Length: 102
Image (cartoon, rainbow, N blue to C red; front, side, top):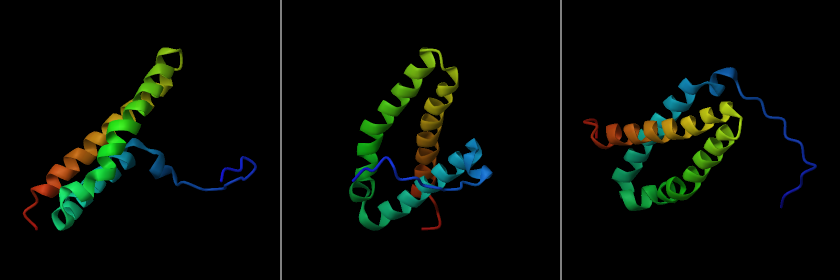
């Protein structure tokens, strides 16, 4: 149920608003997914990520890029953040997949 009158007060620390945190967190998520994939198989471990990466993220990049092209250049950072995050998660996954500490 959606209720637009509900107000949520949520504090996010300054360090979590920086690109370094996003990349570090995304990398760690990739490493974690590799560990889960070793336990239950990549198909099950990554099924929701595949769908999300194929459908939701391209729309987000398109939306941000379009907004940047329509005169809001700051929105290009959003598109770059999505791409960088996926890249960092991918690197983390590869690192985790080939980790010697299995």
